Length: 462
Image (tube, rainbow, N blue to C red):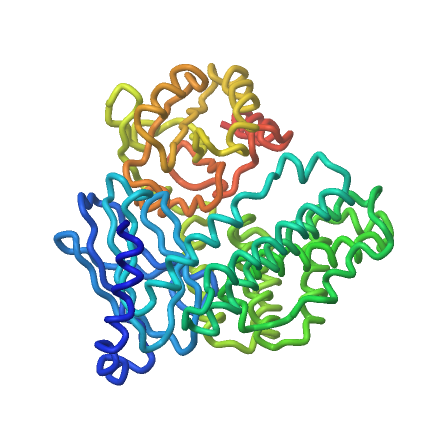
């Protein structure tokens, strides 16, 4: 079996890499080979805001090599199209990656001095995905909690069995167990929303956690947990406000800033503040952002986060109302080329979506009704599919979404159109005027009352 051969070969590479370790003390060497490589971009994602959102890895003739600066062991996200892999990296070590782009799941392979850790990390990540969510969300809170705790205990035991007496990075073992612990804790917080079933001591499990540990910030499960924890505290604060103040649109975000301010660990607090502002900017755009940006500048003490949020803010300016909408030319279901310029003289309502996205599916009936009610008016409905198998997309559109103009980006999440419109999170809706300029880069969704009010106002004034 190829993986077993890889693990055995790792031991030989450790000694050979010693000289290289001395040459690159604050870097990890990542090299590899991709068979049948197309134009899909290989990236290392950075969700921490300590640099660019991602580091693109240059692939030449199917091979790649990058020395990534890191000063401590980390878990990063490697992405290739719709494939996402957690990878464990450590300074002065090497990781060699190979896979066949036409059959990634069965061909992915690791070598190098970090091969064992990453083979194990793959196995652990797979285990964490095997939660029976149907059971968890339909059983009583007590039974669901017991199930999650038993899963967590079993997964920790699984890690111990996997590692055995192998001499691995002590950080890796700690990170792996933290992944399990915070994955479980995050789910239990989400279940705690069922307050009618909640015992008085339900949240006692949080007291057993290393709640504010900046060593865990590179772990996705910890970051999710931290978001759920802050949201839980926000809801507690909102419940104590009078009904008028609690109903104000900005009340949840304002309370989240108060919760974040109370965090004791400087690095955890800095990340949480950056993440809150980043998510606010991503979800709501520039509307009402200035005062929060001023707050961030006053309270943030981390220059990396300041630089990253400034970059994100400047990118959003490109889609500000009145700016020219990014041009595109894409194929429709009949392989005809369609450009944004083709709709000049009409208002354009764009939705970025995906057939497998549940939220896109929930909006579809409302989008169909919206199109039916306004199809005779001066509004073009343009749907742009992301990350799709071309045949599945074409068949789905013809059967379920045969309205307006349906297009598809050819390079998944790396498509220029998707990135130009900053449509991070699906579905996303954009409204463009008759001259091809942005009206709203975060337009209301089809199920809202606001979008019909907006359409009626535009049509009345034109």
